Image: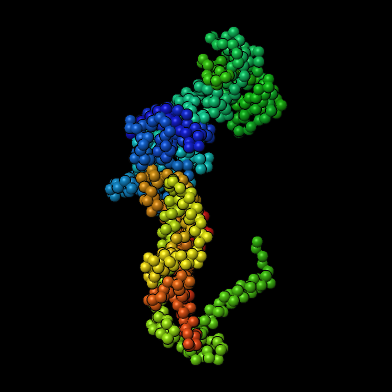
Length: 353
Length: 282
């Protein structure tokens, strides 16, 4: 078992493209960290540098306190689960599981014991003599997990392992992976572009954008207190509404109406964030800070509720409501003070509370 | 498109039957000729039905040959051809597998140059470079040897390209998974790449075996010792025998025996052969 320390890591490709621009984060022993961000944010590159599949341009990666920059992937004591599973197609499930152990010259009866234990844990005992092509997507996923487990590594690395599964199976496998990881207590890094997957699975959520870390924290903390407008818009579905407002003499004004009194803010533009589910119809919110009418442009029916897209004074907004709404309606909305997020317009950074 | 019209069916089968007849008839004639006594051909007409001399002809050819026209026993020539075809096929496969592996998976200086040099050899089959190659082989003292028969033919740009394409279809993740599993390059090559190219290797073996078996000009040129004659070149020597009429029954028997091994190879490896040519799933 080991903590993973990523220290000022930079990745510049031969062509001069910089994918990772100085990332530092420590994943404590036994934690499940999720790297999340849009495509091109460098999340897979970071994972691959930890795995040893990409050279580290600058900085240092330590696993269990040991510098691994120069080590071969095989010597880093890690196991990786790939997006397309990367099972050896010509080998039976049993051989797939045991291949890495045989290469390490683990004793034969020890291999048999570990394979049997992994097969038992993942309920793939009946599949051991099949070839990967005779397995369903979910079964292949389990075999890929099994190949990681039998190694008994210091860390698991997951590279979008669920994106090839259908929605239902994905939700099920999320829970299975998490339960398994808790039971084994193995430090894990999990890469995904799906913020929902990230929220549901992570102990530590690491939000990346453009090769830099935007925010690190527990999922709920990140959701409740996004550090930047990027995180605010990326985490949560539907995304947070970001509205342009102004600060004048310590008061935040939205469309000329005071919504918040905040001390210590310089005059100028700010961004106000409100989550769609925090906007309640009518003036029902306690201590309403914002109240306005929304012109309904478009309604997304979800069954258990609906998402209303509309405009207020030229700014587009999304609201989650339970009641029926018709196109062209005007919807009276309100949100409490404690539900508002303030961001600096220029830097996108969170202001005050 | 599923058509069900009797006339079309009939026409289609007619065309197929004609095609088969066109290919099979000469083979039949050769077979018939090999079953008659030599005197039957003096009239100039070849009979259409088998005669009664089959066992006699084939036994003579296999064990004794025709000493008057300088033809050694066919059994020996069959063995030489077999050795040559197998050496060429396995040698070509071994060399092209490793060179394709080097080109696809290793970053070494002048890699592109190596790639293009291999490519250029496509333009230099043995027939084009036959004199200089003969000179080299003679200089190395490889005339009348299995090495001389096979080594000049053993490099194969075509096979290298085929394996390169096969290797390029193998997903990178598989390579990475193998690295994490602690497989070094050669172990990866042996445990993953070769098994995954199995059907392509089989398909190529069939093609290259036939290529090697049918070699004519090169063996004719570099073998003067009848202990190293190959069967395809041997037929030519028999037909050219000076100062006597060609013994058609013996020549045809030899031709039949020369045709048999490639047919057997194709039959034995047919399933793998087809799979290797059409299979795309990796």
